[in-house]
Length: 508
Image 1 (cartoon, one colour):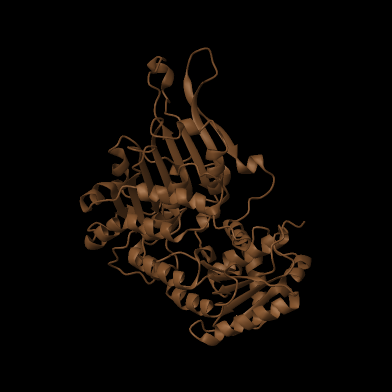
Image 2 (cartoon, helix red, strand yellow; image 1 turned 180 degrees about the horizontal axis):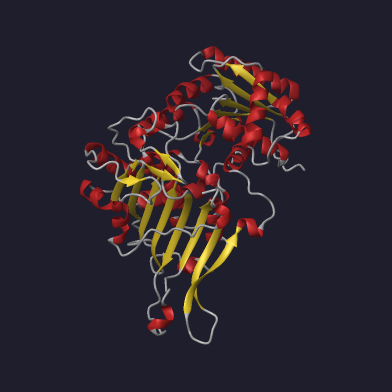
């Protein structure tokens, strides 16, 4: 099978080639793209790091990673024998100019061997402090090259706050055009997330309802059962608001709230997302107290196993004020959404791992049925489940079978696994393919990043200046702190969770 859409010869340079991201996500994604026929015939993958390895040693490491993390299972010998000769390793210190000269020489050698110019994708799977150093080094080696052939992919976090994000954007703009910069948010590559736009803009039935006249409120909830694990060092300087809401959850909110784009070009789609972020109400210090709450998990039990609280995690600050849970009520001040609250929440060590968007419609204007017919009455709701279940369900009222008129809620469900036999690609497969194709639709633009930071900065500043006095305030295996329930209950609502299906128990 050959699906490569005439993709030009491509060289991937992965900074952090011996790191966890490459092991778990990048190399498995590239391997699966190869299996499915999406890579060009002429390609090379160069992993780089400070560890001294030969090409053969690096290939052996990646094979073990693929066998453990690839969605396609253990690599078959015939496929691996075809894929592995395209893998190389280069020992390098990103702070030394010589490293970038070696990359340039290797790229020239590939182009001579292939007798064709190659696109080069530099993937920065490294700590954020190395972004400016690597970006500068790359730019100095490509000053005379066609800019459309040189692309730089940058992982989150993109900045630590608004000021640092602006500084990084400014530095990148001095060396690269915006069309060369791919700020990656892996959530945007998830199959169900992409389907939000298809569901909204390919179906006429929803558009008349998609506004303040029919929708009462929107919830976006991304919860994790896991704790911080071995990320304590990073997480303690970040927290839930920076780690999840500033990027992942605000991007989901933009997909729900954006106006219909004129076409499906990357800049048109991203323009509409920026419109949403610019329309979102900024908080005053007083409003932060009413609209944003935080929490930190304590010790508890998860699936019969005792787990420590955040402050007892390895290398954690025993007096840490870092939030592991955050919930915020946002408003989008435009004609479509005026007055509709958007509730977002995220947290670690929660009762279940799940990513859900719940859109609750207003109740019927007049109930004609007797009260006893609707003991389980609830308003119509559209639920987009991103994980562990991949589905879109419309919850409506229907008559229960029988001689009497009794109503109950039923689900009209589109389920990925029940509808399609093919396995959905991993998010990184989609995003790496788009980087090869030069399609930036699912990547963050510089102004998007800055608007998102501008939106959350009042909350960050308020929390940093006002340490919490009651951390930890929720136990492991709970749904978060009581203040989070109070946040939404004040408006007469409650947080929505999908019932757990039996085959999801292990995933969750």
